[in-house]
Image 1 (cartoon, chains in turn green, brown):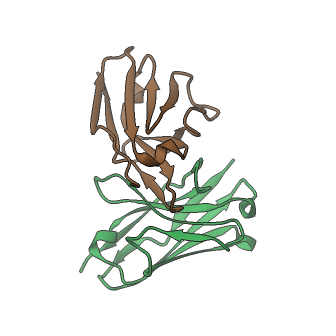
Image 2 (tube, rainbow over the protein chains, first blue to last red):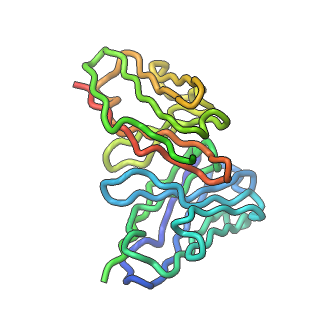
Image 3 (cartoon, rainbow over the protein chains, first blue to last red):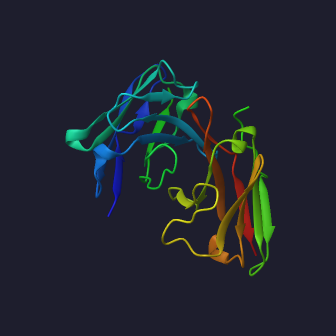
Length: 116
Length: 107
C-alpha cells in the first residue's frame, strides 16, 4: 500500500533553516510528480511546491520562492524540502503528497514551528 | 485570477443532501479536486477531475462542474461526513491553489 512518511519538523528560530524529508513506499516513486502542501494552525491548506518525476520541473508558491528548495532522490524514494530564512508565518504542518494535480495520497504531516 | 472561493460553512441534517460550491476563473479551464479533512487527520481525496470518484469513496459523494463553479454533492449526508472540505486546482501559471475550505456540519 502507498505510504508517505514525513520527518524533520521541529522548533526553529526566525531566520533559521530546516530540511524536511518524505519517505515513499508502495509505489514506483520515480514515476510520479510529488508535492508539498502546508497548513498553518487552525487555517486552510496552502500549496507550497511540486517537482516532476525526474526533478527537471519545479514550481513554488510566491510565499516561499527564493527561500525553499524542493528536491528528490529517486534512488532513495525520498522527497525533500529545504527551508531557509524561516519566518513566523511558515509555522505549519507540512504534508507531502503524491502527484501534482490529483494529490491522491498524503502523509500524516510534520509540524514546523518558527518562534524565538 | 487564481483564487478559489468556497462558503465558510454548510450545515445539513443527517440524510439530507449537502452541496458545497467552489468558484474561480481557473475552473473554466482546469479540473477541480475535492479533499475531505477530519480533525487531526491528513486530507483525503474524494473527487478528482471535477466528477471522478477514487476507489473506496462512498457513492454518496459526487462532483459536477458548470463554467467557473464546481460543486461537491453529498447525497444522504452521514454524521461521519462532518469535516472540512477543500477544493483544489492547478492554475494557469502552473501553481496549485486551494479554496479556503468549508466546514460541513451534519446534525
